[in-house]
Length: 112
Length: 118
Image 1 (cartoon, each protein chain N blue to C red):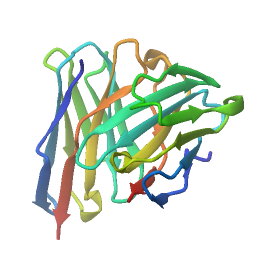
Image 2: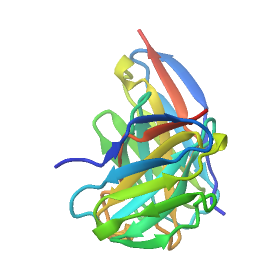
Image 3: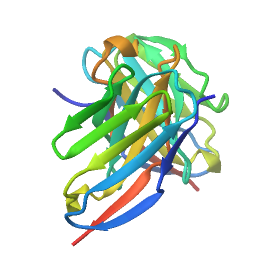
């Protein structure tokens, strides 16, 4: 059974700092890994999707890496801004099922 | 292109009542999924439709939950009768294809329906 863990559960950083969010999964036989952002009271916004054959994906100030063999992914946010404050979730697609397994998320607060 | 639309955005009902949640996927997306997040827990899969057929309903908690997708377009999730533990946020998502290897865009999620059972 796939389990996804995200560390830390919460993080507070001053504006401008670079930061790393971590995601680990127990079953390395994944099809892809997706990072989402959730703002309070809002839905999930897809940030980056990494296929199992890829090592990383970049979008603007965001860079996600994937090490499938070790069951880890990181989301790197450069030059953080207050607008980055949100909960960040990673989710993996495993096996033949089409369902995503989510982590519990990292709640990020970027302060002025 | 319109995204995944869910309504209502919030619903407060009394224990024992019935509630119906609706999801309109992105046009052309045959695959529709329901997920739910109970307070303090991770988001968990409920079920998956391919067009109007239930492909996987292994995550449905019990027979008080009934999902339908008439005509392969919008979907409804009915909870009858609602219990306190059903409170949470119910998300709907859609995707273009089922096989992840041929779907580079992943899933698009709706804003969710926050259900509170009192």
